[in-house]
Image 1 (cartoon, rainbow, N blue to C red):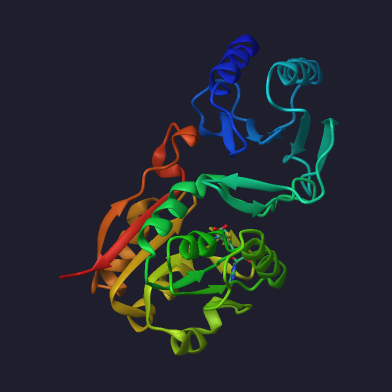
Image 2 (cartoon, rainbow, N blue to C red):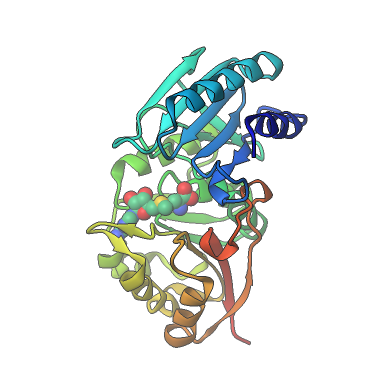
Length: 305
Ligand SMILES: C[S@@+](CC[C@H](N)C(=O)[O-])C[C@H]1O[C@@H](n2cnc3c(N)ncnc32)[C@H](O)[C@@H]1O
């Protein structure tokens, strides 16, 4: 894909822009030759660019010149570039400025966003369809949100009418952003709890608060010393029957390019046979990938009848 074709792609994808988050270009998916290192997001009036590999200086200059020009034709007034190939993923504001209390809007839900700190912006945009699924299925349910991070699933569940949500994450910082996200959305926090537990060591505490009618499992694929999908996912699956109510729906997520859906489906067959695989949620269209099994897997399991 040439720079000119990329410009055209951006213009075409920008026709329906609003305040809502939209990925305008997803080179990471491997569908555009020569651009695997680039993603471009629209966050209200901010154009946010991430570079995953270092570019030749001349090519980078041409890209930024094109984007700066694009800004003059689009709704954006700020251009931010994050260099994910450098340790700490530093960001740089090339044009404009970033507001202090920045948030993204997704289906009218607000989620705090930190574009300048490091890799963890507080928001995973590719999980949009997962949150939509939770919002549509959470009515009157008791929800367990494992690996809750900044509690975006909890917002979706409460907005969908959940009775209670138990958010669990070992990062106190993530949970405190999670609380702020509830306040930002004016969500009544009665029935919402935030537990700073190591999930692999705290099943009895979680069991006490159950049983749950919906369980979300969205772990990292690999976080040194905290969670490794290849050996730890099974520890969660085998505990599910003790945590689940009779009608419990489970959303089991896996974001590892090396592990396929069958990895999780087989764990359920072996360790939680009272559940059956129902379906895989479609990924957000803008995140299309050359190999869907290498991208995010959102798998729904229901009780066997
Ligand atoms: C992929 S993020 C979760 C994304 C989140 N579900 C969302 O919707 O935005 C992974 C989270 O798992 C947490 N984590 C990793 N290992 C953990 C463990 N053993 N116990 C509790 N939390 C853990 C991290 O702190 C991090 O916030």
